[in-house]
Amino acid sequence: MKITHHHWWVPSLAREMHINRYGESGAAFLAFPAQEGDHRNLESFGLIESIADYIDAGRIQVFTVDSYDAESWTSRSLPPWERGPRYEAYVHYILNEVLPFIRTLTAAPIWTTGVSMGAYHAANFLFRFPHSFAGTIALSGVYELTEFLGEYSDEIVYFNSPLWFLPNLTDPYYLDELRKKTIILCVGQGEWEEPMLTQTRQMAEILSQKGIPAWVDIWGPDVHHDWPWWRKQLPYFIERGLLATL
Image (cartoon, rainbow, N blue to C red):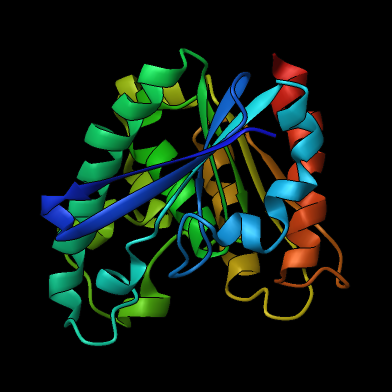
């Protein structure tokens, strides 16, 4: 597998940000790491290896990015009202620097994916900006931010919580676009899968009410919030979800 590394200074985030690209052709994944992970996170825990056959065959390529969690939603020092603006700076970086960079390398459709906190980012970017992405595979994600912010809320928190803003979404411009996407949300019922399990079920109900097709797959009580299961789930859904639509 061909792996290339890219990085540049991002003034709005006040640090250098890194991207690894795995493969050279096929559908593109923008892949977010688990909570507070970096661009090497998915490779380090074997997730890239689990989909290596698809990368080597030129069917997919993966762009892994650094998180900005510790400087935004999961910060241990910033008060809640300062975290949203920091996350919006990260959103700006992804939309206005990462996506254009990917577009210089491929014209393929771009999917989002991630596990745990990375699944939150993957889903949030698709639901907020559906015109920029082809679909998502989100594994064991949360879909609102109470876990990190407690009872605090403001406009930025609201619009970065799909469980909150989707029920009130009525704009056909967004709803019609979301109905064209391939949306896959998966979670287990085993250890450490709360509140992800409850929130995934809530997402299934909301998406159904909005007429947005989605494959919401609830795996069994032996399926835990851990890397061995995500290494099984990602290739499963790539084969049956993404590649089946191409």
